[in-house]
Length: 290
Ligand SMILES: Nc1nc(=O)c2c([nH]1)NC[C@@H]1CN(c3ccc(C(=O)N[C@@H](CCC(=O)O)C(=O)O)cc3)C=[N+]21
Picture 1 (cartoon, protein in one colour):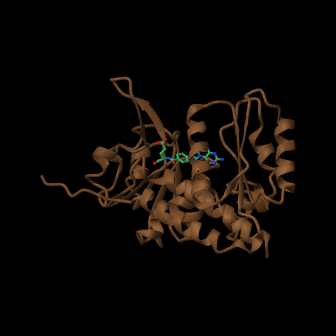
Picture 2 (cartoon, protein in one colour):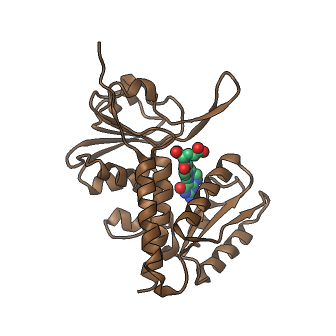
């Protein structure tokens, strides 16, 4: 049987285009006498987190955003981090603040996110911005789900009235993404690692999102032929030869034979997340000068 391969949703290419548009926009906005500024706060030495933070800082440099990132020892106290956030809230050079998650167990991420000025909340995780999302008001939006929506929009994937299934319920991705899909008139189901009959739920999806963080979670038998499959998982796995590679939550090799569209990992939602972070920073920058 000849199987038609899914079309790739190329997040890397779109992210690159968005970055060059942002770069141009920043160059023409020089009446503010300073570039936009982003502070990424990272705690500890998790190599994956360190790599993401480096990606974000490199992207900032590329488009002309100033980085005010800080790297803390794993022993840092809640009070120290809160002080840093308060200082960045006051710092006129800083338009966006992002706390790289997850944080070590002794720190309270929710309490910390509450300290970020909602107008500088580059990741849209402050209760004010999440509340605006629930209410359908404008506000800063979480970067990864915003990146998913932007990519679907680029490829003109119809959402109105479609069945969307989001597998994953995190505050960073699953929950905000479900609300964004709902705002576009999709019929949204949130499933997760504890859902019974997960395959029956995912097989109903016209748009299927994997956002759990478990390699191979979405197998080909769980996908409706012709579905649009978006893989938000970023998992580093070690293969037999001892070298490591990046895989998503979707069994890409098999699923690409039944899906209509599919995002690759790497090169899908990861780069879109970074592009949306830069965009949020520029949005805050422009709004702070109105
Ligand atoms: N407050 C917060 N906001 C986040 O947005 C956030 C976070 N915490 N914690 C960790 C996750 C992870 N994350 C990624 C961003 C870019 C890539 C990325 O650029 N990936 C590339 C390749 C990266 C590589 O090769 O290592 C790709 O998929 O093509 C991946 C993962 C943001 N996160």
